[in-house]
Length: 318
Image (cartoon, rainbow, N blue to C red; front, side, top):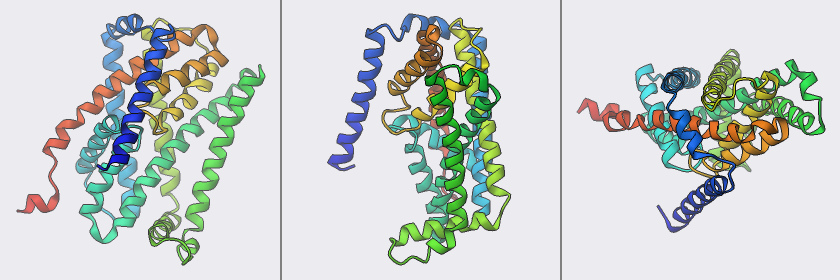
């Protein structure tokens, strides 16, 4: 790692740690209540179980995207690489560090189709984010009367719906125009290869809708995990319309590569969203996110087993 990446990593860790410390010192995050919440072990076990169910869905989605690029990866190996990626998501700041590691493994296993293999990771990330926005948009529209109660909630609702619509438009436009854009010689070869690979999804029309459906299922599980964490803090009466206005947008902020695992930044984002939509639950909502993160990080760390035991196919043949 060169000096600049090391500096960037250090700054992101310092930023996340500083925001987290500020949340604690300002009373916006109550570590005592977080510790008490963690003692509700049935809820914690349920969160862990849902997290592993998420791994199964995410693995299924990635395997589907790989298969559309004529890359066959057994489900067991795809599961292992997914767990390794999750491990590195908490080691490297943001939610993209694991993609870099998965990219290394999958491109090494498919040297003749590196661009196609790498494109599956881009599609996996895009469908996951858009699926989260779709879930939020559906719930916003279902609770439209709640969304329209104030200018702030109206803006959040429109942001969610607009994000979902815009994401779908960009995703399908890239797939539909992939072949044409790949012939633009002004673009770098790497980018042209990615658009050429995106064209494969146009030829297999069912892949994107299925991937998006799996993403919605996956993100619904994330919301369920957060709900259980929220219950562990003692909150049981937050209206569903408010819950789904807050949580999807809050989870989107955690995908931005600013701090390791979204720690600190996620707390600040959730506190702000709760203050806008349901101010009486702002502190508890922030504590619940910390509980959610701790349990999810525990699951991610279990990826160490797959990292240690993973062997490349060519290594096994020897």
